[in-house]
Image 1 (tube, rainbow, N blue to C red):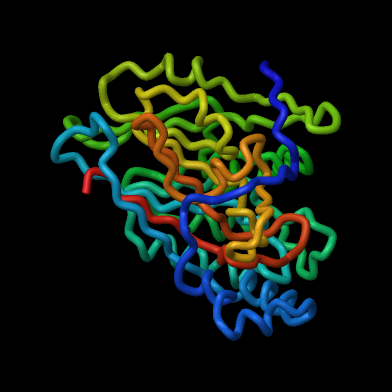
Image 2: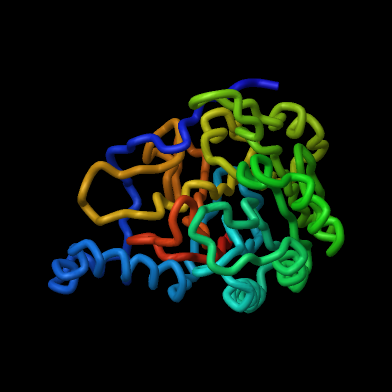
Length: 307
């Protein structure tokens, strides 16, 4: 296994993808009021607990087969637990994802909250029961995140197995009808084992996973941390990641901007294209460290390929 060194919180300098709609609220006159400490904290708590966006992307990656389409709903970083992600809120997320009627649903790990401000503990069986309601004609696929590994990997595996949700860990599946098939690949977590300050060992095996692709059909790669994107080959049509929460706390146009990545804001949020390769990073749903989000509302992502 390789060792990687992403910091748990590294300073980043900029973010290329602009934040829109409610995310720009702080720029107006109301923003001046919100920027006072207690009011700002109160707004950030409301944003985390009550807002829910559906963020849509449409793209046709290089080499995508003509006439082939695929839609994917993405649930990332659930972090189940109150005050912002209680059981009713999780049900709302599942209902929203199902309402998008996508071909595939991808759930990108970090299933339960680990911060010290939890007001409602959601047992593993409870959040797993809600996720078991997800429906998609080509399947629901899950991967594991770093918080799952660090805090209760056995419990998460047991809960997902109990509701028959497949965990993809350096694994893949060929889905769809003949002539319109798609490979769905899921990578093991890249920072599964903490070795010391800013030092981790992953359980990811990108070369070994892709070596098992045996047809020319497009490959969709599910990862938790986006940092692997620097090593993803052109053979992969789209990489989908979570983990960063889009920064979670972000005041627009006020640097520095923070993201849990060795690459700062390079892979912090949104649709990133580098040398013709595509990455979409979800801002996620739950919270890490504190139950607040600012400038990055919780979101379910809906991706349409070949549109």
